[in-house]
Image (tube, rainbow, N blue to C red; front, top):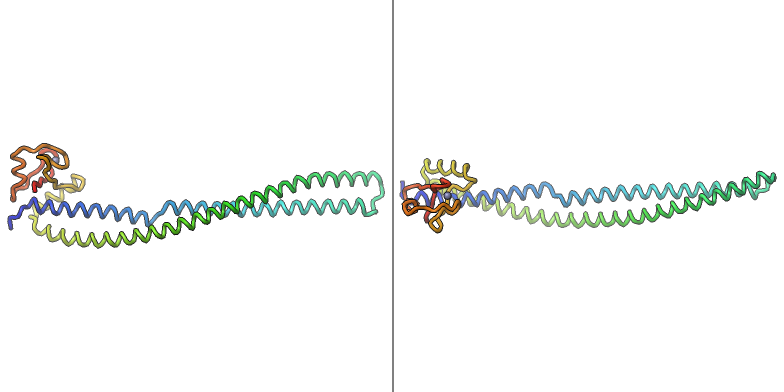
Length: 236
Ligand SMILES: [Zn+2]
């Protein structure tokens, strides 16, 4: 075995694996964002709701208009009976007069309803326009954001290829036994198996190292471990 420090190789592979982990988790976020965009989903729902409300307001107005029209026809029929000359009986004429008056009174109420329906329709038209504009805006933003994310994804994947190649080269210099220790520690210790010695301590858990432990960490052939967190120490 070429005796360049195993700890150095392990430290280098740890750096590469940490980069790999960061890229992998960023890629997962990108994939998730590309798959589901909550802002867009909300804007689509709002637009659909506004479309439906607008359609309902249109139907309401049409109904109100038809009701007013029907009422006007009833009034016309009664007035033509009243003034047509066919009915001569004073009691019947009086009844017709009362009927016309009552129909006209109710017509005023129906016309109020029609006006309300018109105002409601105008409001719904405005809301629907706003929802449509908002959706168009979100769609444009999303398209821009997606283009950015797709670009970032290809860049990260190229970076990942480069790291993999470098990692293979470094891994070939590590003994199988040490590599196994490293891989097991990575699994047990949240992805960080190799730590630097900083200020005479383990850089991750902060355990203070004795002079002998620091000395061992600098040895080119030994693999020394943090006495507290058990990670591989690299003294640089
Ligand atoms: Zn430690």
